[in-house]
Image (cartoon, rainbow, N blue to C red):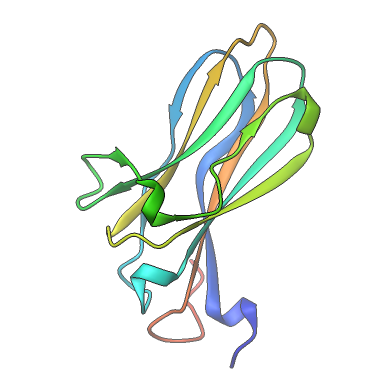
Length: 135
């Protein structure tokens, strides 16, 4: 089967919530059960209403789901997004082609008084065994 439902899995990393100044690190997503770990990840950043500030979404990677670092530009496809009131109520996609087992999103908000709603989901593809188990 090559349909997307049986060959991809979405995982919540950063809950969509109103953000004011600060950093929110998402939940790490384990890629071990997916085939070619280097080519099977997309982070979908989601923005709702934004009144002010800049809300940057960063991709982070880890070998152990404990020690995290920003993914280098060479491990990304596309550009990590920054949301402002000019691009509220939109989504942005970033591919991850790095080799680390775990990946997560991080939202960094600056210059906000009232802020805006931002979050991120990690989508995994190319499973070792399809259809993927949904739990």
